[in-house]
Length: 216
Image (cartoon, rainbow, N blue to C red; front, side, top):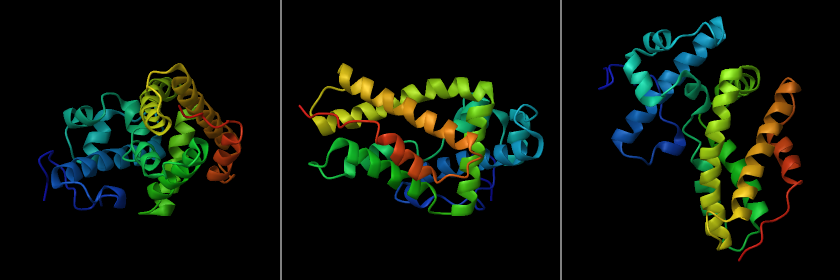
């Protein structure tokens, strides 16, 4: 049966991390996932440049307007997933007295683990494809720079709560955006090594460069 967006969602399971949400939100997630899976399959077949929004819509059994409603530009299909807000959630769940840097390390690992919970092999393949596109496709890389500022603001908010600082404090903003840049370089390094290294271990190595963000 097709949902209100005109697509069959029964074949697209909701990820474990989203099953506590209401029916409407779960249906939105399933639609986004179906669009993204259609895009990835087409990109694997014919490359990023040759893949159009119209083709993605046809493969996902939705209209092009539905694709644009969920993803304003084609690059967002690659860059956006259901796990983007998880880092902020994971940080909030860490013990209040835990050092900020240790909380970040554990939160990133937990967010990645949750992302791979439902279908590890499929999610790993998708992660590799996304990483390659982020590094190798100029349009995706450019859009990534914009999306990093959004993710950085989420991290700012979580760091401010944990440290008793203001979200707009220079130290909080510099720490959060420095972290975003360092994680991007880690991803580039991973792709340059043909994605053979253990990504969580690379992230741990990256975080050793940082010092703890002092509390107020």
